[in-house]
Length: 381
Image (cartoon, rainbow, N blue to C red; front, top):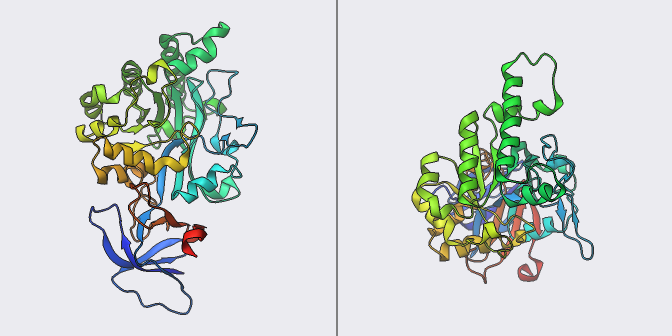
């Protein structure tokens, strides 16, 4: 057991922090109280003067798949030989030895949605994993967690120049629609002869996981929503770069947005309107919003900075923090375990020496599954 004493707890269940002790037992938050009497079997951590937050969540990344290397970057994000690859599983590509996992822990990021890139109209299955571990099987919270679909420039430029479909936005939508039509036919039948490709969509058609749509431009956002409605599927609007231009329409749809990477350069026409104001405009319109670095497009350790810049450009500060904690967990469908400090939830915590949205603040401890996974030895000495 680990007892965190004298802490200022930012639960994310409520806006105002509380001063209390927090007890961790068997990897879960077991008790939160004004004062918990320590016993001999408890490890003590005095958090006086420190701020305790739930571990931060990046709702869209390619960590461990597009690996960070000192010389030769390794990117296995896309199976560029076939535009329709629903069977690809992120868990078969994530390398926990990627140094980005260490950087994530040092920034208080304890959970990530990791998965394929956006070269294919249907790219495969995302997984929600924790950032501490050496074996991906032990890091999984939810897998599959979403089915990746992609609209816009990336699929067009990956296949069109080779004379293959899709070379247009119409081609992308057609391929996705045809595949989902075949999947619906399969599940409407008796499924007596299981089809490996179709079984990849089972959780999607059962409503357990969403389509995870790579969309930047307004027309791509509308196309993704149109297709999701046609097939009665859940959807997240990932990147949602021009979402601020159609905030009311997105709010009316009920679909959440995962906004970013706003910290990245505008390298393509479809991201020319990228701006940190997008998250705040969507949030104030009533859209559930999470934030993403899209690691390694922006490096994962800058997730708190992205929240700070979103707040600077108009997003409510508490909403910005929830966009990398509880709201992100809800959008990723893991809020029964993560995203807030509550009894019974996983003990994944980030202990800061100040406000995470202030650039001078530092993480002192990162706790995953009740264990100190990273410690700022320079400042804790």
